[in-house]
Length: 616
Image (tube, rainbow, N blue to C red):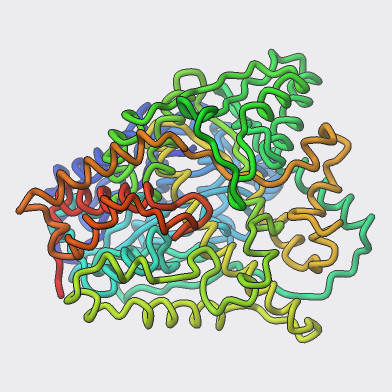
């Protein structure tokens, strides 16, 4: 039931008289749930829902209400449970009856049986709220890996929550305001954000693996899940078999749907594994061939240049895998004008500046996939879980005393106005966030110094970098009404791989070595040995020209809100020089000069559209 949820609890206002506000909040999530909507309102609580139908069209309507005696429990739920059948059978054995086969009802009945501990029984992606009318209590929870989003804020006697920031910002008590901390997030860490930060003043994101209780005594946040470090008892062969078992089980569970399912297929290791397992299952069930999708850019074949971060392009490899698996493969081409024009839609989908055209290309891709499917499986998270990125392997990044995907702040400082640079002190801000993150790492006394450092890197990647990609995938897909599932985010797999020693994880000194070894019988040898290449980006120089022209137009507008934040002359100099000295990414693997200009365009778009008030 991948949808949009929002709600409002208030100890002063009579919410039965405020339905128009609730409707406005809920309407902001229409793209997440284009198929249906619902409301439940009492004096103190307004619970809302937008629905994208994936399983049980009739039985999964929300908000869902269950009455026990004179006690009413109201559920609004966004997500998918992948162990629905097992939990339902357990609950039936305890005397419960079900009126549908939806996972929605299983979530609600699980809460009735186990209370807040229900989350410990779930295998899936979710963010949900349960309001108890008799107890006047709200329970919120988010899945272990943070695949599904959930934000909240308190404003006086009002408590508001929503799947996206836009739902909360639609409430009249929540103006779009940002202070020094929020600006440090945008310019120092962006497009990453500190876990738990909503960036806007006073708004928080419920962290992955956490739940929240809210009543008249206040708000209490509790962590119900986290990574635990312990010795790894298995040898190489046992580890290989266990990884394959967990990966295949996760993929197979996530193919369940009453609507068409497809896969992303770049021809890289991760998407090829998912597509191979899915295609095999479809064959065994006598279904039509699996539909697979890849994305590329107009004229990339002419302009592609190999680099350490993007060693080869995808077209040959995706075609190779599609032929090997006999899938119904569809290739989508994006041109520079589309890419630049969609920066605005990508910004509004995130409610914040994001990964520039890495976002807008995915937005366009998801729009195309939605024409033929409602559910897709994607290979996100394998790099964070298994150690796929270059920064896991290079001594200069392994030993860097900062976030490895953003090694230098020189460029970030360069573009800021002198006044803002002096106020934010982004180097200090980044370092404080980095140290806070290291303090959270679950240590193992048996680790030698290098193994301990790699454990830090995995923690940073799973809790920070992966969060950026999950946010991107959720917002761009759900803005298109497409549900994207991420099998490599199965918490059982993450828990197991977390404790595999580096010598086994990097089998044969390869990135994601143990994953390659585990799945080598499924794929052609050339796919198993293919060097990692990230999600593709355009190499067409017309894109740089287009975003340069667009940014110059913004800088020429005396009313442009971004002018109060940046050093206009420095940015113009960079545009004119075409950044000949900026070849390496300033964030991640893909974000170089064109993406910096696109990011600044997104910042200006965001400031204008949301009428952001800057409090510094």
